[in-house]
Image (cartoon, rainbow, N blue to C red):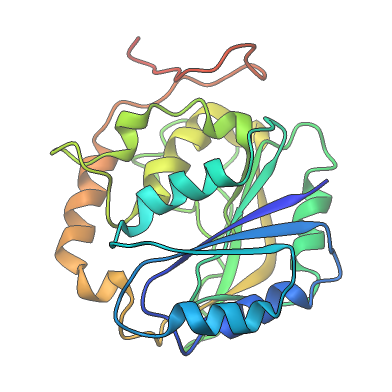
Length: 254
């Protein structure tokens, strides 16, 4: 089992080495990370390359222009390969794993064949009481009205990702979401997986960096609120009874 880590970087030069170091210290060693760096006028790319220190599991690319979160996630997932059983793990470049067994905990969850995706718990870099969110109530179907729980560390099987319609990654103007991309992909997958196949990991696996002044939730707050409303207002996906034989979005409205 190889975990494919998807790491987006904006302006996170002070933090990216810590992010990469938290991967390299993991007891579970069968992973690759696909790091995408948007140009933001700092030396994040140089620091990421230095921190990688030639590790062949670490793949760093620099964009010529800023593509923002959603498009970078899509491109990185495709860079990671196309095996439907691949396990994708999101770790943003200004955050870091909380323990050296975080990836092992994720891998253990997928030993259960009924696990299609996971979501979990984190601690804030500022307030360690933040982020210990509970699981969705068993049997939840209306994830778009329920309190948001689909938080880090977010992981999923590649085949489940492939069931999402590309249009649901896009804003009302047809461009990819720049922010709240996590809801754009997690809500469809939660709806398809249901609580039968979406596993909550209660153990804290991530330190969420709330100290970064360039965090998009701070600099694009109004856009975050608007995009969240757009995503939550969209029709839900149909629950899947099992892994589909063909790829393609399963919309409840179809």
